[in-house]
Amino acid sequence: VSLLAWAVTQLLRKVGKYVEDIKYFVFHQASQPFLQAVIRELNIPRHSVPINCDRYGNTVNATLPITLHELAKSGDLHRGDLIVLAAVGDGWQYGSALVEW
Figure 1 (cartoon, rainbow, N blue to C red):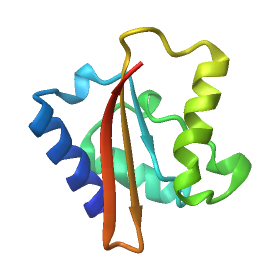
Figure 2 (figure 1 turned 120 degrees about the horizontal axis):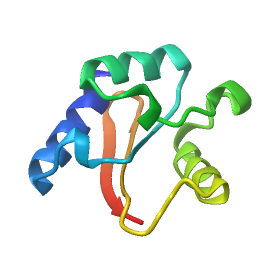
Figure 3 (figure 1 turned 90 degrees about the vertical axis):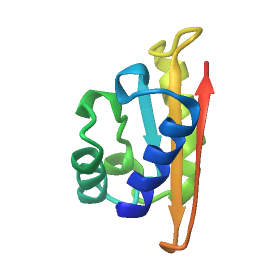
Figure 4 (figure 1 turned 180 degrees about the vertical axis):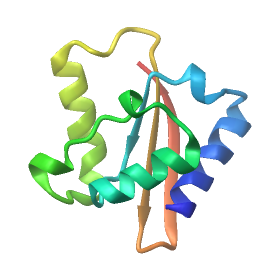
């Protein structure tokens, strides 16, 4: 939780954006309690974090493309939307990116 929150905080600081600028935060979804803890730690709105681990389980980092596909298919993404992608692995590796749709 801390590493993922740190990665997002560092990314936003580096690109000069704020939580309010981001439409969606697409995270590695180990579990719903994990996501709830990340949401609390980053103090981001729950509606900005799409969750699908309740349907698929822990898809590890495949969660990112699966979730983006679901958002695109639903029509919830629009040109210019900012999306933060972030994932961790084994608590030692992490990655984050800002994508403009």
